[in-house]
Length: 135
Image (cartoon, rainbow, N blue to C red; front, top):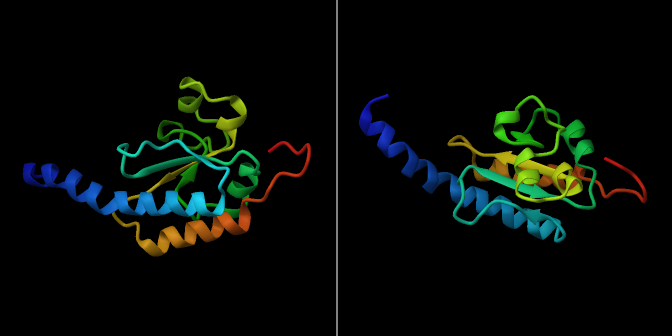
């Protein structure tokens, strides 16, 4: 990659992707007031991580298949979609909170319609836990 492209890419990336991440986070907060957003306001523009304390996250992964760029762990644990995030565990989150987390990845190709689709899938497929049910 040419040097000028390498320098321009991060600015373009952040300015294009961060508003979409913020839109996703706002939608999550609206749909799931009990959700905890772990992403920092000035953090990575392309990553949103949220925990859903009263919801069966593993069901969500099974129901949505590969239609979203999501995982339960960090990027370095790809292929292990249902393991709790070791990053959340390292910063002191409980095992329970970590295993109810979803990491959403956005990219330059992500559009507002993709965020709307993701929020729709969350609303349709992230079901509340029944009493005593472990996800």
